[in-house]
Image 1 (tube, one colour):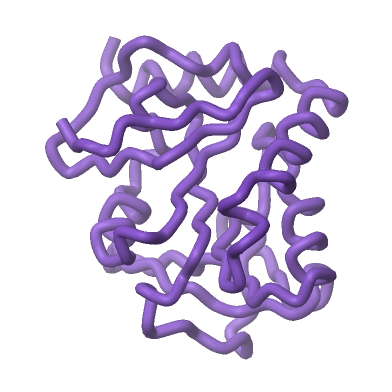
Image 2 (cartoon, one colour):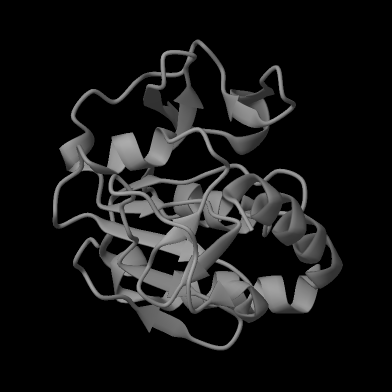
Length: 190
């Protein structure tokens, strides 16, 4: 099965996995993790479609006084972190309907200052590799961040696979949170 077919299959499967109790468990695991607790500057995503709801993470970070950035993706393949101070008023739907920071939000140029990055994925391997949405934005972006930055994925246990199609430029996350566990991933690229 190629990546395009796999994305379609996994998206359909993920829609059937929706469970607010399990989502809550996943988010709670992130909130008590050391990486989250010590992070002062975080880059999160605004969930969309059947993704695990990230609003509680965003709200918690804002409440705790963390600097919160969300990505804005540009046609030239570039991703720009922009700071939000209010989840409701600072997010606007892009042309795909995905919530992103408004143009008036401040950009972060020094991406090596980010302490914690939530990396979206449709599915993950225990080594931290993921099946993304196909734009390559995060792989290009992760190549620029500091090695000390905590990179994490969140997913249902049912979307952890032994193997996924990978490319040489794919960047693994350092850990993955599911409803059952935190997976500490190997740190080498394949």
